[in-house]
Length: 107
Image 1 (cartoon, rainbow, N blue to C red):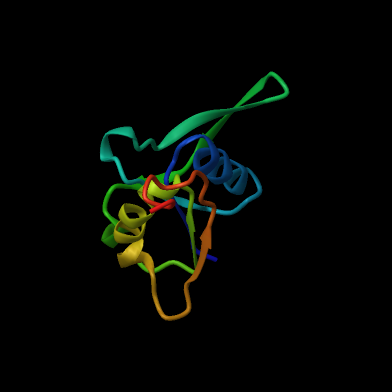
Image 2: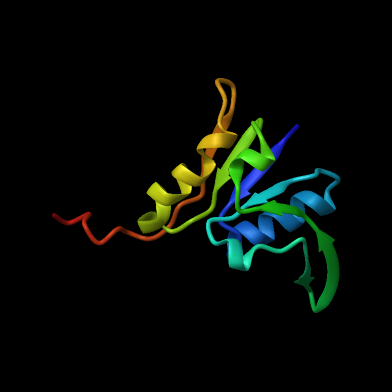
């Protein structure tokens, strides 16, 4: 199963790391090319674990995915969807892990 996480912040990065540690091979399709990482450290219970996750700022490079997880704040959702578009096919499941209330919500 091909899984990509868009938004490699605290939640998206943690989720990608846990997927990798469970034997999956997730990809990070990050919105900000400057913050993408090929590997990192997951610290749980005070013990760091090195985790390698494939990443790209170009969704075309990652290709169509079975699952795309949108792990961004609400105000970044439009940009996340644009970044994820090349990874979305007719059978791709989108999983929104969105938090925060956009500034325009009350309008």
